[in-house]
Image 1 (cartoon, rainbow, N blue to C red):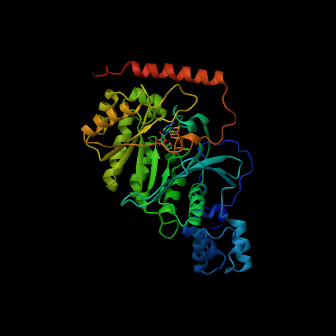
Image 2 (cartoon, rainbow, N blue to C red):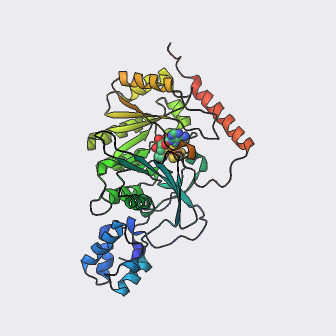
Image 3 (cartoon, rainbow, N blue to C red):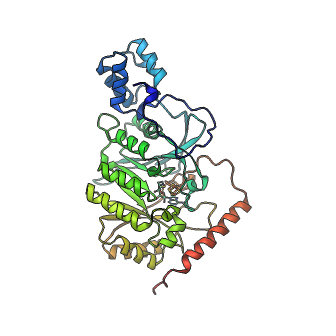
Length: 403
Ligand code: SAH
Ligand code: SF4
């Protein structure tokens, strides 16, 4: 098998790239058996594949030419065939709290994507954690109106290596301070389950003890509700955590907040998530962005409790990070607590997420690396107006708010 024949991830639809892409697959996304086959085809002993892979995953070697234990001809052939690094250039922006950092990763075609590192110091018996929030696509086609990435539109899928290399970037930085990545969440740019092959391949590499080596339960895949993607995960039965972005239990409102709801309705999404729980025994996390006056009333809470009641579910309430092109604001503390109380009263485990890194737009779901230009004030005003009208229609048929 030649490297060119290694599995590729075809984009959903072709978009012109800004520059020429590097045809060499990134080693972080190459399956060990394919890598072993490459060595076998060249008459090289099998242990060499393992040797190179181990050096790669150690994070200490940046070039094949530095792998001194290999014959020079093999080093050159490897360099022709593969890349050790798929991210062209990365710039990091720290935040004031010193615990949240955002990285902008350049890709080989001139596009860029973002990832975020969130560090949580040890507290009491709880060990220190370092969570990396990674992107799975450049842009996103789903177009949730409250999301900065959704506003950008879709450019292309990331390869498995481009996904994994975001984590390796942070792992190398943390290693300098004797720290390591403990958790990975697919909550950056893009809809992971619209790039399922690459995401499954990346999550497998991240949780393979012989590759990146994270515990399977420490990887979370967040989806806006791609039912066939959830079904694929269910067939695989991994121990990864599945997070579903719910944001509304009522179909008319969810149609506006998560446009994918028109393709896969909320009932089907919850049923698919329940099948994931049945196959894996894992509790599903439901994310619910709290938007003032839009989806945060006691009626919305009661609808959510009715939808999820009886499921092995955990609800995470997230105050919305304001984005320019919506007229919306985050719900107030009291409203969020009242919402949480209704869910808890119905027996649902519920937490309220404190948003990190808001000041640099680094919170998950706040990533908008590639804005070509800031929209002009009249464009923003038109978008806000359209959104207000669409939402008004969805809110009209809402049951009267109790009390
Ligand atoms: N596309 C996937 C994963 C990326 S978005 C998904 O939608 O699940 C990751 C999370 O950030 C989602 O739950 C999303 O709803 C949330 N998010 C997006 N924009 C946000 C905002 N402005 N404020 C708070 N959370 C937001
Ligand atoms: Fe895409 Fe997720 Fe943003 Fe929706 S919330 S637009 S699915 S990245």
